[in-house]
Image (tube, rainbow, N blue to C red; front, side, top):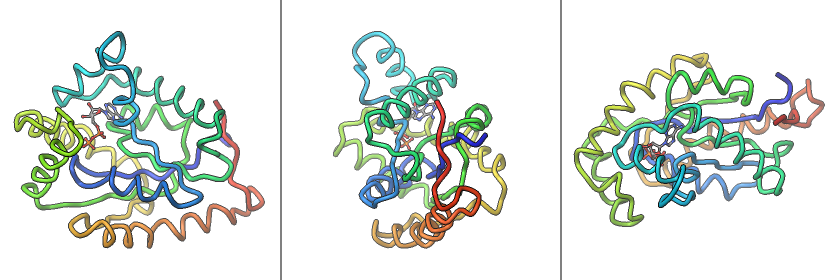
Length: 214
Ligand code: ADP
């Protein structure tokens, strides 16, 4: 248990701005952004396992849990070996993971969750507009079709939203996702700055974050 990655979960529905905020946070020393969606998109999606994964993504379905967790473990380990992610110094900002309760359970030995930042957007139409804009900008086919968008929002409500109940309520921080990226960032940092300070002054680990396994 002492060898877990120290993590913050960026949580919220598709189109709420997790990726946008994750990429900004990645520029701040001490944070490392990891998006499982990007991990999948970076595979060769034209053959083998990548092709299989693409079939799930393009329908708006979740990639199977075992495969997702296996790839995530390998990727995280590789990034730490290569020195991109420094588990002793960086808080892992997990974007898009865990995506259901099963994944949350499977990750229990891998990550120590310091906080869950729940980006909340009650305006569904605005989320759909954001997804459609992103489809044009980033050439994402899972955002281009109305039925796939609807499926993704449904999967979120049915499978992903229940993940929140898996974590203690005092770790969950709701942040209003309707606003400019700077406005949303400000509110995320109000949560994360104290978390980072507490993490690096952790009396149990003597001011050093605990080391990680794998
Ligand atoms: P968004 O946040 O807009 O849903 P992501 O880039 O996080 O976009 O995810 C895109 C797709 O990648 C998902 O619809 C799903 O098919 C797949 N995916 C991402 N993360 C996971 C995960 N943890 N488990 C299973 N599938 C995932």
